[in-house]
Amino acid sequence: MTSLHEFNTCRMYEAKYPGAEELVMVQVKQIEALGAKVALLEYGNIEGLILMSELTRRRIRSVNKLIRIGNIEPVIVVRVDESKGYIDLSKRRVAPEEVKLADDKYNKSKAVHSILRHVADESKVSMLSLYEGFMWDLAKRFNHAHDALAMAVRDEEAVLGKYNLEENIRRVLMTDVRRKLTPQPIKILALVGLECFAYEGIDAIKRALHAAINQGNEDQVVHVNLVSPPQYTLYTISLDAKEGIALLNKAIQAMGESISREGGKYDIKIAPKSITEEESKTFEAQMEKLNIENDNQNDRENDISGDDRED
Image (cartoon, rainbow, N blue to C red; front, side):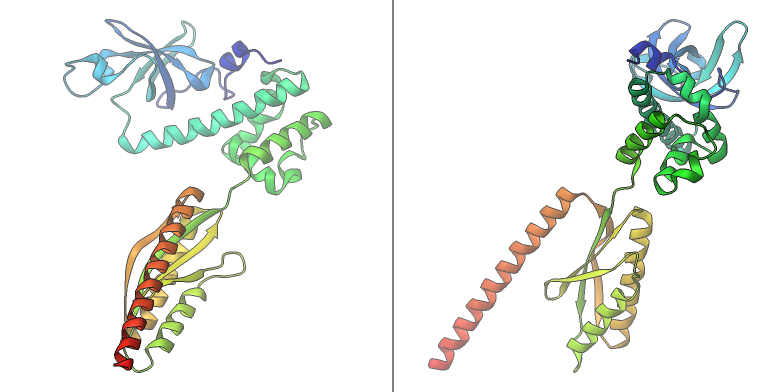
């Protein structure tokens, strides 16, 4: 079984040391007068140092407010001395927009590392042999090993066909990859108000709703549901949140243009957004409650009208 030591000390990338100006993720291990000693998480937890002068551009009033033991931080590599094993790092040189880039890269690498640990366990081989055998080459071919494995879900042979992997290794690898990296469908939802008091107002609303629906296609359908007049939900199921949101925005625009041409109006109650299964259930429960309240209100109005007729 792969030991925790091997898991922690096996680097994720082919190079043994990071290069100057590279963005890496580190965990703070110790804070001293000179600076903070850290472990480079993607490079087998080798040690690096963030000098006090590289922690922040501002005057340091309290080191603990800037950095704490155990924290995981994105940093920039300033210099590397491989012969002495010195790695100088900087936290202050990391631009705000680079934080997410570092986090995304690390999360991808961590996911690959976890998959390889499982393959190594099941196949009784070392993690390093798997990296050297094919994973680092995949990283070169596909920009990142994670991207390669995600593509293998759709076309395994195109990604792994060039490697002479043992049948057991390939089977365990793809089982784990499919379980962890298969894209999960995302529900994108919007709530829109739609009204038209023109002579053919009902038909105008129908045409506007069809204009929204027609923005979908076989791969990504736009659904429209009546919540209670004049509110409608639009939703779609997508493997990519950005694409799904873009589609619903396009659908709302088409719907708005249609109803506006016929003298009606619309307003966006909830802009298109991705929602979790739990949020979807909560929203549906709220809409159901609203429908019941509207039905009860209509029943009371009908009862009153009936009483008036009897009088």
